[in-house]
Image (cartoon, rainbow, N blue to C red):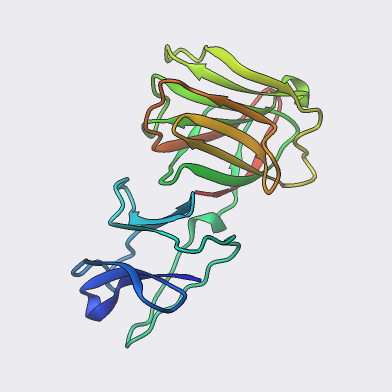
Length: 231
């Protein structure tokens, strides 16, 4: 088990601990939490590394490799040592999209996102360097072309056009009646798309990658969508 302590040691420090033993890393973080307001944090666990940071800041305040990598499937949360807490988790939200092809953007702090979506066709994602459509930008179309194909597009001109760098047949990959779970990773420009817990069915590597800080999501071409994002 990996434990993350934020505002421990009487609010003065934060740490990452492994197997309830020694701290992998411990840093000074005076007054990092307060009962007066909600403060946003993120935890990214990928490539056998844990990174922890503040919402809106992409540089982690602490990070550490996991000495004995294992599959992480659940997270727990608690307060103690005299503290009570009020929590909000962003992945608890249900997000709805209309048939309009307008991206809704969220910050992303790791190099992968998992999500579920229920729609008839055309679940679209944008990987961008800001909270809006940027130049350049990666677009991922899942269940496009009447739910028969999926593609990765590189948009270089900011005009909503670009080249499909990879396109594969994916008949009936999305469904209105079922929230299907997907995983998208984008480490060092290597973009992979697939159902969660399976091998990717679509991938492409950009030889000139850039830093991705936000993900956009939308539906269109006759489809509306119901989404749950774990970012």
